[in-house]
Picture 1 (cartoon, one colour):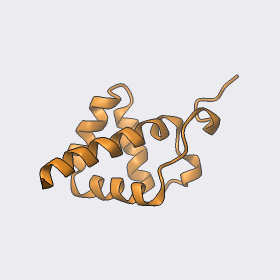
Picture 2: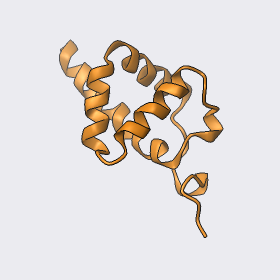
Picture 3: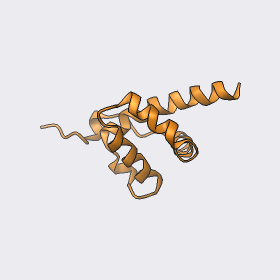
Picture 4: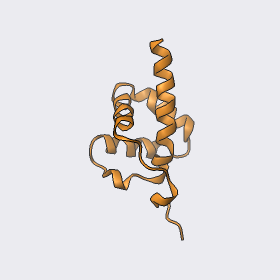
Amino acid sequence: MVEANDPDFAPALLGAREMAELLAALVAHGEEVAMLVAQLAPATSDAVLDELERLGDGLLDPEQVSAALRWILPEVHRELGRRFSAARA
């Protein structure tokens, strides 16, 4: 049986720089990040946001990040980069 949190079935966690950027966006623009997560993963957005906040607060070991969060983080990071790049232009 395959476990939902098996890291073999999810991408690696973002690199340190990307995670720092994403967590900074969560702190500075939490509402926008929450709306984006809700758009990308409506069924699991509350759990994903809770896990992301615990990770940012240092309450979650990066090795224990769920597969769901590992799958959505790259897309959240890319979309935030697009939004904020467009805003700076």
